[in-house]
Image (cartoon, rainbow, N blue to C red; front, top):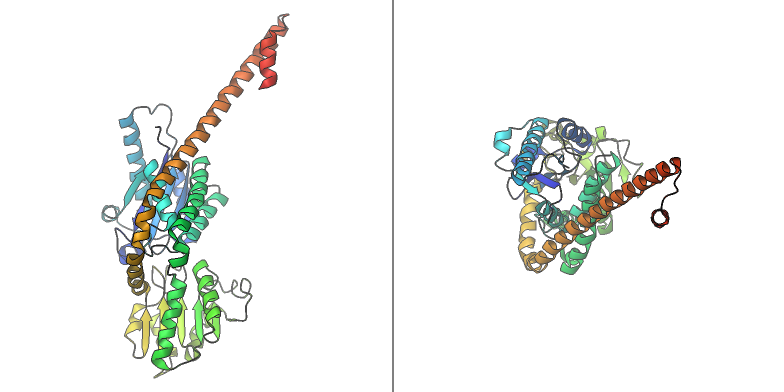
Length: 397
């Protein structure tokens, strides 16, 4: 079987802790620049960058030149490309390549397809059965596709992976049993209400226009906790993309609302703190209980605030531990569909291979027709019309 020229490398929670993952994460706004470096400094044809709290992975393609024929020569070529790409990634994120290679994992051909499908089905997620990852993958692919960073192989691989992932998730019943971050956030707020007696807490949400932020906002509104105030790092987005009855404020005014806020949730893709220690401490009401929730890697909220009297800080790692407990409960379902992932990956691989074979056959047929047409024109110029068989072939094609 000819192996497709599709590849993947990256880091995830399976190989590295939050501290390491945060150092190599890539903000969505920086992805186009990174991919331009990939394609400009190597021979790869396209790339999709997936960067979430739990993983940073690069999917790419490389159609090696026809002069590369031997298996050992092909392997040497792709190892060289892997080495150059991970060096570019580490240079881009200001991380040490020698340290990071301890945590990076590499996939080629059918292994890359199977890994993508495992990620899409959430079988490779910390939160096994989660709903968010498929949407994150779709957005990563859409960003790359719209920017012109994808080719035939990446387009087919991601589109087919989405198709099979939905089927496998449905068979596993993940949509019915998954515990989402938005649900866990609401559960934490309910515990805060029980502990403090604040029956209708005022909530501030930073990052309400992002995918996870908008999901949390929707869940909060369904639970009817109390007044919701929302803002975004790009404050122009606040109010334009939100259409509910929540209150919107400019990002620069977030600290001024802390005295009347009971629960603060931050979920942005910022590389820096959205809530810093000194500025926050100046605005906190003395003796008032607070619940701060930080769902970001890198962190949004300065962790030193967790040492403040009366303030409870729940970070990404806290929720990750809860999710791990649910993961163990759903692990039996994952075992049931593991074979479906392998089968699905093989079907995707074979489907793309067959499309390539047909495209090549079509090009050969077109070349044959053009050659015969040129031959017929030459015959006419020489006073001959050519055989009726040739003319029939041209008409049928």
